[in-house]
Amino acid sequence: MTELNPAVSLRPLCYVRRILAQLLLFLFLAIVAPVWDLYDTQWLKKHPGSAQKIRYYKTTAAWLWIASAVAVLIVGWEGVFTITPAPDDAAWLFGHLWVRYLGGTLIALFVALSLQPFVTVVLKKLKKKPRTYRTADTMKSLDYFLPATWTERRWWAFISITAAFARRLCTGDSWCTTCTGRSR
Image (cartoon, rainbow, N blue to C red; front, side, top):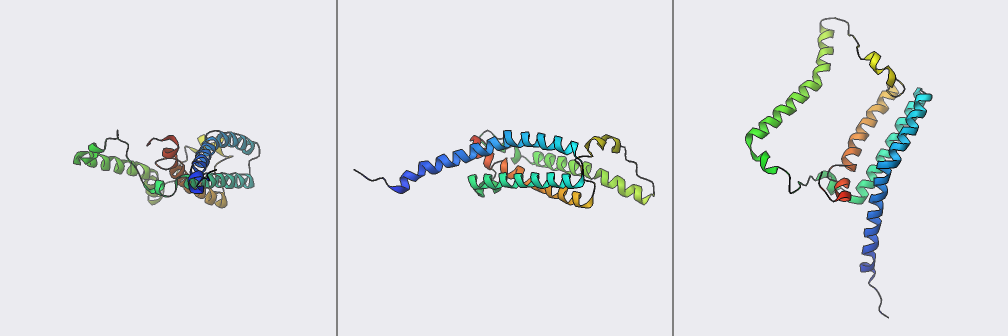
């Protein structure tokens, strides 16, 4: 009877584990996380309070970081920092100078429009005019969720940063590309 080479026999097992991990992460992100979020958000609506909001923020941060860590373990760090264009991408288009100027102009306009609320606040402060909060009534329906205290705001900022990292680690050209076999 011939013995199997352990290095060769383990390769398919590692591959199966990797595929299984990808599938479990996909199921978690596509099914478990939205169902959990629906349940937890309804609970938060019924029991609004600072301690409940912070618990919600901590739980959200925890599962986002865990999902991100699993995605990095599946793909590795290379996929996080590498953008691989697909063969059907319009890379030839970005070689034209006018496209670069157009892209730069659009980005500058986006940044300017994003800064507009801050400029409005500064101008009102300089002119010593009171600020009006027209959106306050609209946002009342989200009071159970949005931060109100300094501690809640710090956790909210942490959740925002966590969401940015998790989005990059769990989508883009890293885990999602490996899982689906496609770029973007």
